[in-house]
Length: 98
Image 1 (cartoon, one colour):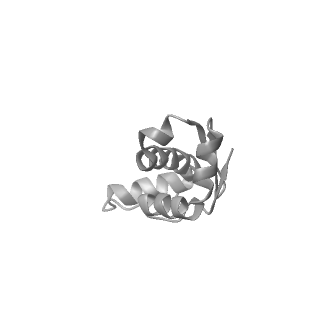
Image 2 (tube, one colour; image 1 turned 45 degrees about the vertical axis):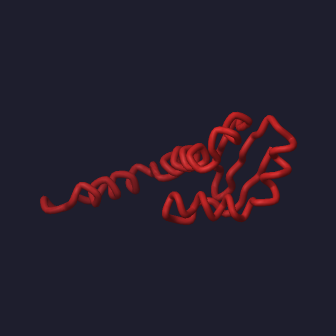
């Protein structure tokens, strides 16, 4: 059972406790990473993106263009940095482009 917070807790503290006690953080991270990918990559890359999945600390991105996959593979470390900066914490440690 979750611990009871006192009546003077902020909404942020209550939400953090709720997320932690119900183990919702991995699902929230999954959605946040997808949104970050869409906002950072722009329409050009997103039109060739089939699926974005976060498993653990690895981001799996399915692309329909082999040329784009090759181009993005040269900038994996920059993409990781951009996504982590967008999310304001280190979630992604590696990227697999398929």
